[in-house]
Length: 346
Image (cartoon, rainbow, N blue to C red; front, side, top):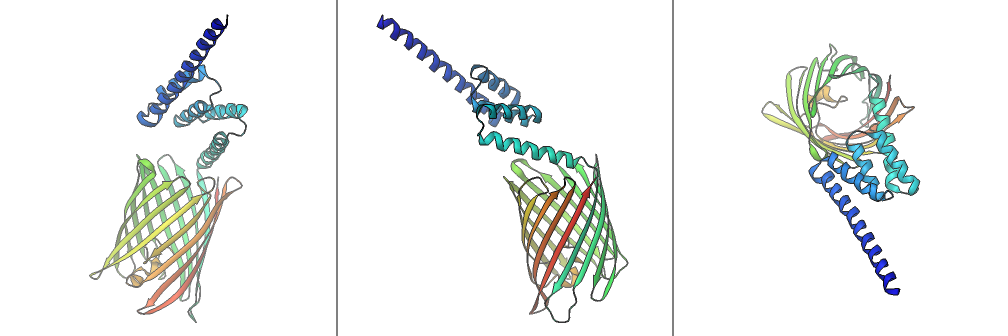
């Protein structure tokens, strides 16, 4: 009798072990198809087969939810995460994933709003005695279309010796795996360039990498071309970008460099910014009107900022900049910028 009981227990134990091994093997195969071959339909089939044998296997459920997200089925993924929380209410992966789904859903809703208006105020203060502060205000209206976004912008500048307006038209046409940046500006005021034009092509690569190549042209008292590009990388909640421009002028070549870091704390509109740079960039709206005068002077620039989405349709941001600028050979001054921005989407 004891022998029969032991034999029965041995058979049950062996069957359970083989069954468990079978489920684990299915899970391993599903992971391989997900991460290596990227065959998501096959991975889903294997994962669901494993779930049919072990419905409470949390890791398999998490994989099924991940596969739903990879195949653009967020509602199905949400249901799976809720099912996991009914089994394991404290499961950190499920809690975090539902939060990420909420953020992605909010970003899609915001991105679907086609219109936006923005106002930016940017004063610049100087330590040099007798030099009055500058003020720069710009307003723009932008509209998102299926081909990309287009923006019209008007800027007003008040500096120590004059004031005036600049008019801009900007567009971001879409391409496969990237987009272009196109900008044209005109002003008849002496404190702006008379003409300015810009073009960049930006491309997204695998692994969170992105690259840009571009050219800038401006005409004030003479025509100047600047050539540059950037390399960017996403690392989790961080984004880093290294940008450079070179500007040939009268047999000399001026260079500018800027390293930007962002830390995202919510949607794509919620982040902290830090920037360190040298030289003058043709994209610096507060100083590029003096591009030819500042080309061969040295400078060091440090910026810190924060931007946040509020009330679902609005973005507010502030960026403070310290610039140590050589205004004549061997003489430097401290410059301080504060840029305050408000944007509304509708």
